[in-house]
Amino acid sequence: MPKAIKHFIEQSWLLIIASFFFGLLIAVTNAAWAPRIEQNKIRKLNRLMASLLPKATEFELEAELEIKSAKGKKIKTKVYKALSEADECAGYCFNASGPGFADKIELVVAVDKDFQKIAGFDCLASNETPGFGDRIKLPPYRNQFAGAPAGILELIKTGDAGKIDSEIVAISGATVSSEAVIKIINNSVAQVKKQMREKGLIGDGK
Amino acid sequence: MASNSQATSRLYKETLLTGLWRENPVFRLLLGMCPTLAVTAAVKPALTMGLSVIFVLLCSNIVVSLMRKLLKPHLRILMFTLTISTFVTIADLFLKAFVPRMSETLGPYVPLIIVNCIIICRAEACASKNTLAVSVIDALGMGAGFTLALCVLAGIREILSTGAIWEVKVLPIGFVPWAAMSMPVGAFITLGLLLGLVNLASKKKT
Image (cartoon, rainbow over all chains, first blue to last red; front, side, top):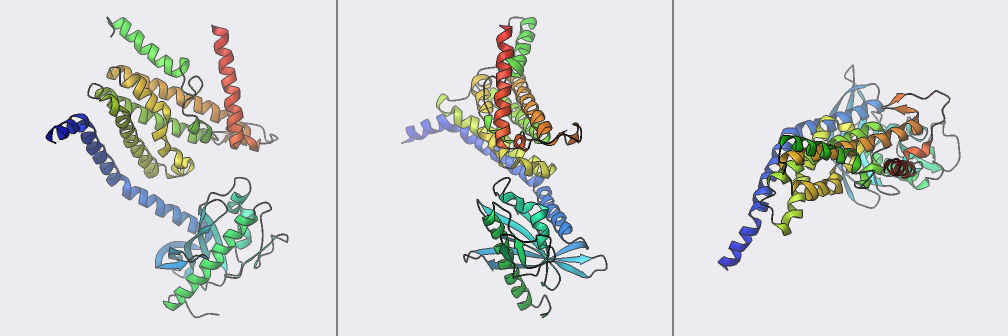
C-alpha cells in the first residue's frame, strides 16, 4: 500500500501543487475584481431602467419577491422603485423571465407607479433566432408596450402596431417569441402587483 | 540549441515569422476556427479576442516551458489544460471587470478559449520542448498571426455588412449593407475566399 501511495505522489505531485497554486491565483484575481464586476452589473441594470423610465433619476431596491412562472416554477424578482428628481415615485422596474423560442428570455419590465400601465421592457438576456425572434429587442415591437395597459396584453397577428392598446402585433415569422414576451409580462406584472399590494407598498388603486 | 548569438537571433526571427505567416494558425493550420467564425462580425470584438488569446498563449507557454522538464508524459495534457483554463478565467474576469460591454458581445467565446486548439497545440508542439525565450517568441508570433487573421476577416465583414470599420463610416451613404456578411454565412464565405487567396499567394512563391 505505501508503495502505491509513493507511486501516486511521484506521478502527481506537480499536478497537485499546480492545482493549488492556480486555484489560489484565480481566487486572488476574483477577490480583487468581483466588486467591480458586481458594480458593472448594477450599472447596466440602472442604465436599462433609466432608458425605460426617462423621468427617473434614482433607483432603490423596494422589495425582493418570488413569483411563479406560467408553469409553476418559482422565479426570484427584485422590484426597484424609480424616483424622479423631485423625489416622487416615477414607476417601478422588476426583472422577469420565462421560456422563449430557443432559450429562456430574461426581461426588465417597467410599469407606472400604480401598476396600471406598462412603461416598457428591455431584454437582459435572450437567445432567439437572429433576424426573426431577436427582433423582440427592437423598437418596432418594443414601442407597442410603452403605455399599454398592464396585465391584459394579447397578441394579434395583424393590426396597427402604432396604436397603443392592449393588442400587441406579433413579429411576422416569430409568433412564438412575440407571445413569449407577452406571457412573461402579463404573468409577472399581475403577480408583482398583487404581492406589492399585499405588502402595502403600493396603493389600493383601481 | 544555437551555437552562437547569430544563429540564436535567426532562430527567434524564424519562430516569429512562422507564427505570423508560414504557419499562420488560421490561414495555414486552420486551427481555432470556432472563434474565427464567431467573433469576426466586427473589428472591435475580433481584436479583443485576439488580445485575449495572445495573453493566454503567452502565459501558458511561459508556464509550460518552465515546467517542461517536470512533466510526466501521460499527465501533460491535463497540466496544459489546467494552465490554460487558469489564464482564460483570469482574462474572462478582466474583461468582465474592465470592458463589460465587450465581454457581453463576446459572450461564451472567451471561456471557450480554454478549448482553443491553437493554445494547446503551441503548448504541446513548442513550449513543452523549447527554452523559455523560444516559447515566448512563439507565443507572440502565433498570437499575432491569429489576431491579424481575425482582424482581416472582421474588417472585410464589418465594411460589407455595415459600411463602417471600427464603427466609423468609411463607405459612401449610397452603399447598401450586405446583411448576410454579419451572419454566420458571411463568416464562412469570407474565410473560404481568404483561404483560397492565401493558397494562391503561397503557390506562386514556390
